[in-house]
Image (cartoon, rainbow, N blue to C red; front, side, top):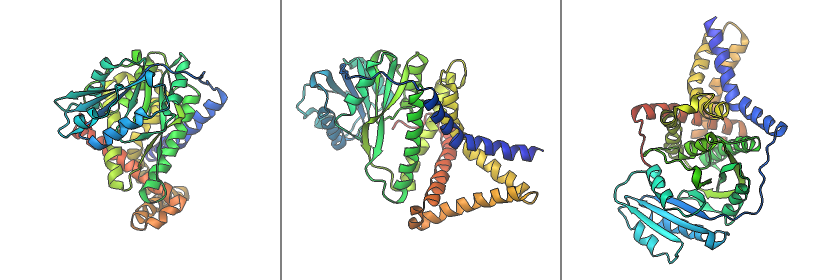
Amino acid sequence: MPVLIAFWGSLAVIAFTYAGYPLWVLAWGRLFPDPVRKRPYTPRVTALLAVYNAAGSAVAKVENLLSLDYPPEHLDIVVACDGCTDATADALRRIASPRLRVVEFPQRRGKAACLADLVDAATGDILLMVDVRQRLERDALSRLATNFADQDVGAVSGELCFTDETGGFAAKVGAYWRYEKMIRNAEARSGSVVGVTGALYAIRRDLYVPLPAGTVLDDVLTPMNVVRDGYRVVFEAGAVAWDTPSTTSAQERVRKVRTLAGNYQAVAIAPWLVVPFQNPLWFRFVSHKLLRLMVPWLLCVLAVSSAILAFSHPLYLACLLAGLGGVALAVAASWLPALSEWMPVRLASTFLHMNLYAGQALVAYVRNPRLHLW
């Protein structure tokens, strides 16, 4: 019966996406570990940073990079001012350090285009990719660098942590990010991760492939290109970048919808990502990235099919009521924030919000495949 197939098929894919794949990759990492051969290692590194109208935060970020616990003679910094119309470039040039170079571009072109130009100006064997907002721990680069002592490693992701996850929507963001980091850790233990932390990752310069202008997810396409070249992309949990989480659903929606829509763009830019024998991480990429984009629509199928089957068996009625109850709890939590202190409510609300964003991401991409530059 088609309705039964729709119910059980959608339920199976949803369960695999959020529980089955994480359990599989955790088990794979324990049964077939592939440890990185780390040791103290200090190659020459060039930190690359692209900014747009961010004078205050850009200066703070450069000072943070200059303070890293890494041999000064082995670290330089190149900053791109991407069509800035404020005093960002002048503020950066007032930093008295011979290790800093500022490159101004008259027209705003986006992060991917800037990075492609900055790589040509880099002198390091390793490129350190960072964003302007996050503060790095002093040992972050040193921890990343130890992984490059293993010649099989082509790129290393750092760990994004939040400074305050104690309440409200920030707690939901923090819970989701801890779940995501658990999966990335497991992927790295048994091979490669399918994405890196855009706020902090490093790559061998000779493996960097310039991305098309307007690319949103350099932190997905760049590591996937590294894996395609036969190298590993690993996760270094000790290399920490600190950020402030979104405190409202509206803030998180803007960020998350753009990021999720970037997955559609990534597949359009690199169709080989969805071809099993061309993408060495095909199973992981589909399971970790693409299935999550399908879940909002599968939830709709599950809701309709369970409603149709509700009076044919108590199981389907229970599923329908459980779904409605989860939505009701999530909605109630938005009106009564204290409810989010209860773990089941927090999980239901997080699940609902993340899938609302995933559904909106498809609409955003269809409306504007180029998305926006920043």
